[in-house]
Length: 360
Length: 150
Image 1: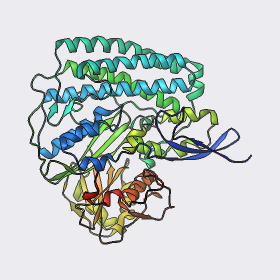
Image 2: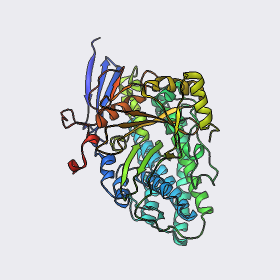
Image 3: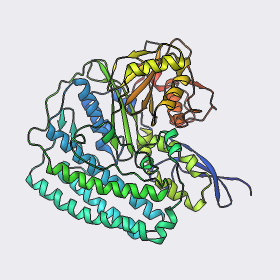
């Protein structure tokens, strides 16, 4: 049968963000594909060099609309390392709480999308309803549902009071019971099993050679999580499980994300239980001493990498950001090979694409 | 964190690749090893063969100043700890051997470095732009002078 190339994107109903793909098919079989980024490339790394560290916080928060907090957390950690300061323990815990709420929000968003693509519209509505709960908490404590502006260099700009604790615990309890039922659906619903089990499997060797990280890697048996392997506060003080699965298929990726959501809810509760008292920020100088630093954090989609160099001024001399989506995207053409045309949406959704992150 | 330290790495490179690498002490939170550009393939092969889990996190490229011609390229790995290989491209030639035969995931990182800094990665197919517009003809954005900044 003849080969046909189908262009998808950059604007396409299947995609929530602009990405251009060319998928080669023969009959019902996909032969392969290629992709093109850049439609939301904003030149953020270069722009960061032209702004002060404080202005950069606002810029960097806008790299991504899903994981905005982890970007500013990683940037702040890099600047604070060059400044040689340690932020107050309470600020570390508040940052950690926001990171885990962001992970819940990101994973539930993804679960909704995969459910939608495999025809489970009810689950899509349930997960997005549940996701609202994590957004509600973030909005209540920071004032923002998408851009939270919680971080500042030297700590955080918000504090939590007793009312916040009660509200967060109440919502987390509800979220806990909702997430409990999610895995049951993916383990028992025939449609969910049929559309994910054995679909687009990724071997451990392939994951390692492409440097893919995060839930996709953990679903292929790669036991790597920056929160545990290069721990930073508060993860160095709190016990948590790193979820892995050896399946490597779309179902394993779903399993890992559902379990990680549950673990993040537990982590939020542990953070609240162990929240230290005290200040939430320290004063820092405007100029950052000369130096270079590499900082990694575990974003919802995996290892987030920042390199920062200061020349002693109040603006970064170089900021390099590598987001986890970029490594996952490089594997997409391989994933698309030898699948059925009907599985394309499941494979695309399985990557948990964040084009804004990859483009920067 | 892994017990890998800089002395061990320098010795490993000396034994297996037969040249003397040196430590670049500048980057906090990282062991950075400075190597000649032509040794990049052999050292990456050593890394991949010696660590159970070693992935390329990023390729970081920078110029220290706009009026300096030299470009620094850091291959940032995670191998149980943060580990980087630093290569300096001195003079007008901006060529480096491509890593994609060893690490297919280096593809996007190399393409970004090529577009943003004008580095030519040898031993790989020429590819269309990954990030910049197809008709971009203003040269690598990171090499333009500060005066051109918007």
